[in-house]
Length: 309
Image 1 (cartoon, one colour):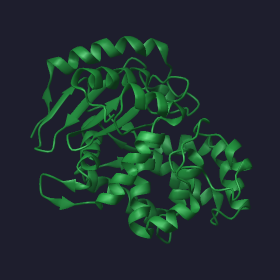
Image 2 (image 1 turned 180 degrees about the vertical axis):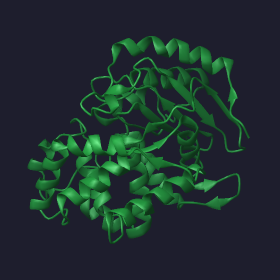
Image 3 (image 1 turned 90 degrees about the horizontal axis):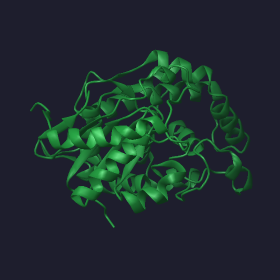
Image 4 (image 1 turned 60 degrees about the vertical axis):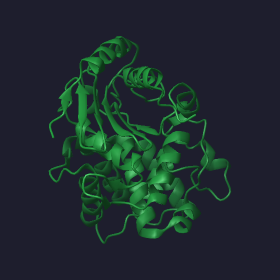
């Protein structure tokens, strides 16, 4: 079923787009710095197959930190709850997503949650397989199944750009390796992690993944269960408590839906039992969230009373 353009959504996009001048693209990753800061688009995917949209929803972007939700779902399915959370915590943090500070004060030195970079690196470390290619293809196959889009791939340019500029993530990895939270070669793990972050899709693909999480792991179009309901519940809970980095508390108050952002400007939303949302707006605020994307979600949540709270 084709995605239908919505005048109502278009009006909200135009209103939210005024905020783009308040943000800037993530130029600390050189490839991401090439994005148009004025872009803003949205797709909403319903469980009956309907889709409404506004903006250039075919424009591809990389998942970045949105991939953390999907890799977490995969390793929970592969290893189980106890194994995963012995190695990474479940608590929100008020620190930036790339901070090392809490690791130095924790005993044992495990990351606070899977949505900060340190925690996401530990989660990616858990993906099963004998090589980077095998592990990445396992994750990519899962992403394709969630999105119902077998052609989804990754941007080699963005992955390379991130790998070459990943010095903070290298520092996190070496700290975690010193404390035996990760055990593999740091460069191997970063190769896998930067490919994971560079998986590319459009708003419609992202909205469909959000819809699967919103429907507790079931694809309502064919009745197939893609992930267990308890895994979907855990992921959505992290999206509420940690999905917007150290702005998650404010996001819960103002918007109140499970959502995860990425520094490419993507936001995936999962309104429980209702629909999935995919947004792309690459101008970011100082905490790394799409400034116009957040405004758009706030307008939507207020207009349609989407908050869980």
